[in-house]
Length: 235
Image (cartoon, helix red, strand yellow):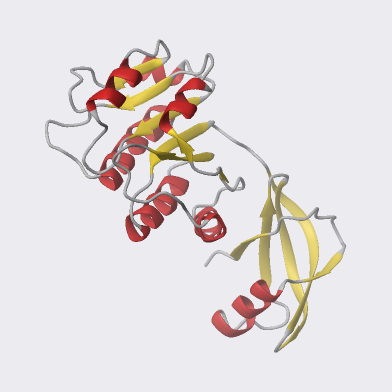
């Protein structure tokens, strides 16, 4: 059985000790029923460390960082530009997309977007838990929502893969592997308006592709697209 993995945002120094946060303390004491002497792995953008619980009480846990066991590694830089949807599917999208290697979430507001805001604190918590579960070390960045037009204007030279049911093209393996940064645009339930589609498709940095002849929900399209990209990149 592998050790518990927890995200530790602060700097970690080998052979140093640390009192854990209230959230980590609650999780180890009340959820995992941890005991003194248990090994726990802590990670952040600098890597992963093996630690040992050296003190444990109901409301206090202290650990000693024993040694570094993994260097940080980021195999890809994948941005998901996702039109906001309702709470439950949005949380599933964040969780599954993190597991599939997304490094940045850019919430998009379009004409047909029903939801106009996102609880970034809640979203980050979900992303952290998914990073812990999926054995990664980089927690995805989550940006504030932006309007579609503003997002497209800020693309600069970055290529944008656009999931477009009207496209006859499939995702090209060479296109994926040749990009240092991969950005993917997934539309809202009900798709983009005709005006938005024109703005998207006339942008020289946009690469449209089709996933299926079927009309997919936003969460299904997201997971399908990222699964293909993950496969091509061997993540």
